[in-house]
Length: 323
Ligand code: EAX
Image 1 (cartoon, rainbow, N blue to C red):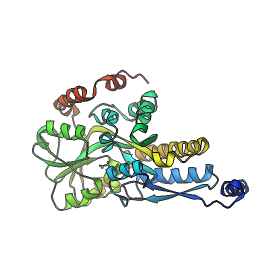
Image 2 (cartoon, rainbow, N blue to C red):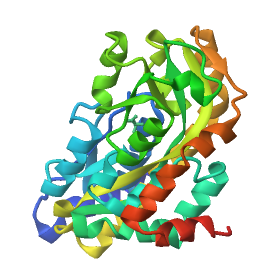
Image 3 (cartoon, protein in one colour):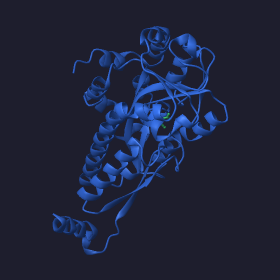
Image 4 (cartoon, helix red, strand yellow):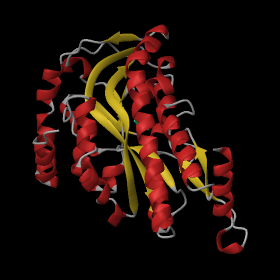
C-alpha cells in the first residue's frame, strides 16, 4: 500500500518528464482547528493528496486567518484562495439562489436537510454558483442554529424582544430576527467573540458545533435550543483555480470535497449530543424544550418577502421534496 502510494506520488511529480513541484492548495475557514470544519478540512487534505498521488498538497488556514466568510468568498472569485469551507451566511450576497436555504424552519431535521441537499435540488444550487465565479463542490454542514445570550433565558419570542443579536451577513436571517422583535447586527464571524465580550451585542446564534469550537460559554450564559434555521456549509472552489485544472484533476477535487462533507456531517451529529454536556459543564444554562411554533408563526412574513424578491420556484421544489 505504502509502496503504491509512493509510486503514484512519483508519477504525479514527474509530469512531462521534468520535475514538477507539487501545487499547494490554500484552504480557508473561520473556525478553530478542533472544529467540525477542521475535521472536514483534514479529510479534504488527506483525500486530495492521496488521490492526486501528491500532485496537490493542501495548506489549511483556520480561525479566520484569511478573513471572514465574505472575504474568503471574494478571494475565491479573484483566486487569492483556492478552497473555502463556509456557511451559507454571506453566500446569498454572491449567489442569490442560495438564500432559499437560509429560510427559518424550512428543514425539519438533519435527514431532511441532507437528503434535499444531496438531491438534484442541491446539485442545481451548486451549479448556480459557477456563473458567479464560485465552484460549488459539495454540500457540507454547520448544523441547526440555536440562540445564546447573556441577558435572559429564551423560551418564547417575547424573550428576545429588543435583544441585540449578531446575525450573519444575510438579509433573510436579519429579516427573521426583526420579525421576532430583536435588533439584528450583521457581523463577520471573526469579530463576534470580542463583540460579545465587550457587550456590543448581547446575543448570537450558531449550531452547537460552533458554540463548542469557539468556547462561547466564556462570554454567553444561556443557550436555547431554538433550532430556528438549518445552516448548511459548502465546500467551494475558486473559478480561477478551476480554469487551470484538467478534467481528471477536477474529479480529484470533487472526491476530496465529498469526503470532507461526509466527515464534517459525522462530526456534527456527534457534537449534537455530546456538545450539550460540554456546554453545561462549562456553566451555560441549556434550555432544551423550546416550543418552536410561536417562533415559526412570527417569522412567516419572511417567507412572503422572500418569494416577492426571489420567486417561489426553488422554495416549492424544496417544500414538495419527497426523499
Ligand atoms: O460557518 O458566521 C457564522 O456564524 C457561521 O456559522 C460560522 O462562521 C461557521
